[in-house]
Image (cartoon, rainbow, N blue to C red; front, top):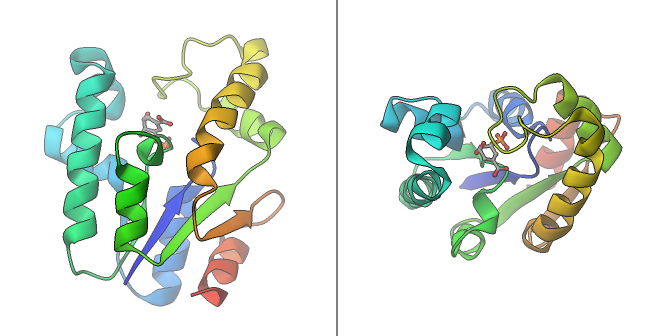
Length: 170
Ligand code: S3P
């Protein structure tokens, strides 16, 4: 069984994934961590040294490796993973448990303002332009995110509450 967590940058995929994995006593895997380990570079370095297209190719490669392994895991995707190539279709074909962790635009802005620096897609956006950027970006990405089997509203809930809510739906 694979539980897949997806959602925008800063939606808490990795934190909730770890919490859920602990509760279920199975490993949590973070797709970005796997890419970093494989490339021996930080995500921001992959973007700056090799470019986004290279990153997206690696992302799909690592996604497929993970989806094809039989290991029971909680797999946290990158924010853009479902939105490129056939990734969302592949995810839905390999898992009956795909969860979209949905955070409101103000919620995302609040979280991302604090941690823009190491995120290549938003690090050069001025703080005051972030709400508009996120709003537009999410509008495009929601077409993919909304295909998840379950949509979990995250505002105001702790990682533990979210892990419980997800576990109840499995
Ligand atoms: C990205 C999100 C990041 C990381 C990369 C691109 C995106 O992951 O994969 O910077 O396209 O939204 P997180 O959602 O874990 O920050």
